Length: 272
Image (cartoon, rainbow, N blue to C red; front, side, top):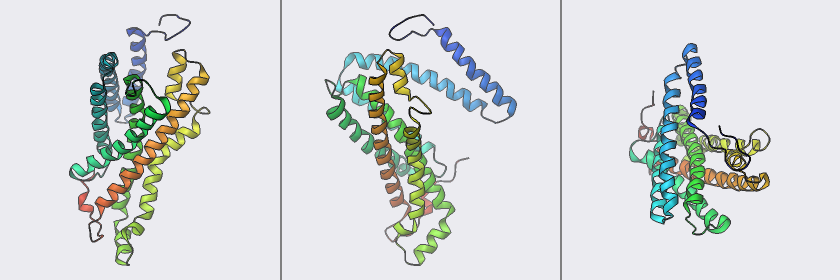
């Protein structure tokens, strides 16, 4: 690593190789302990390197263009991939395109509404779709919303399957499906909101959030970095919470038919 006093200290290929060596050491330790996580760890590390390097080249091009169609295109790709990840992380996901649409649509509504508010009202870059602001903001909103939505849907479908006898018993006693699923719904929402609540509660005490750390490393005054981090945390909480609420409501509607019967056959077989 080159020495420097201001700005970003550039990293060399050797610096990245040293960091990769830590992953190699961890892979060796997991292999010796027989956890079965060695291959997933190495694959994830390789994906991180390849995906982020490709993203860096793409963003260099898009930042140089500063054109709305290019910015919108990469945002659409990010949303589509986030929808796929939400569906892939669920143990018992909804069958067909419904499982994909539930995650993608809920995140589209929540993240893009919050993003537009941030760009048009709060940050106000010129132009408003300036990719240096729009794309990183969307990435943080989507990443956290994706985690919340995936956790909530996974808990919802798993608990609906495990408690199917209890739920059907309540329905036979005359309860509406909203009442029969109230506990399952609350637990799903709690799971989806817990990551961002924990992140906000620990920010500045247990951990230094990533965006704030990056700004400080790049030479931004700490107080200014803190302001941006507070803004981002609040935006993330809103997007993640709204997305979770929408996703759970959409999934609940899919689990029941027009006669308020529980339709668990609409869930795919559990992933192994």
